[in-house]
Image 1 (cartoon, rainbow, N blue to C red):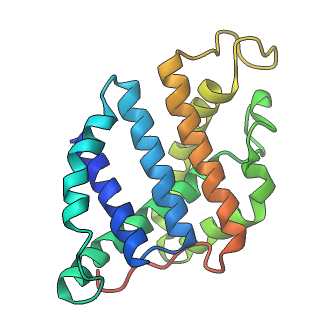
Image 2 (cartoon, rainbow, N blue to C red; image 1 turned 120 degrees about the vertical axis):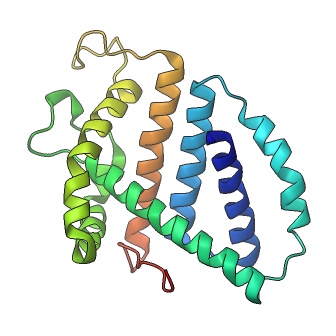
Length: 204
């Protein structure tokens, strides 16, 4: 299932780029998701290159697909909804990486997300406008996940400020770094876009 999902992400990116369906923030969310999924597969000793090679014939067959018309419209609608959901995930991950009250001492200053605090907070507040209960219910889980990922990615065993025994196994470190880096890349794009929260696509 995870391998198939990775292939679908590659297809979304190929179609979105060729047909110019995906704007900057959506591109960042999709790219971060692809990198994170690839790292996750590798951490479980799966071979993402196998999916990439198996997906290529489908990408080749869709290279001539018209970017307008009903078939393309249905594909675009699906991609629009998927990347909007990715934007929510990465906005919440980015916010969860921000320094602030209640975070452990070792957490401070280890992520570049802090440089984009205003844009990240604006994005999450925008999401709360129409989805407050869901967003607020999800935030504690994202905060816990962010601490686990930061511990594995940014706390080498040689760092005296980190908890003892913090050094992660290489596979976990690589996955956690993809998680943190994806959130940082998404946060870095937010100041450049007007709609920081992202609107739910119409028609769904």
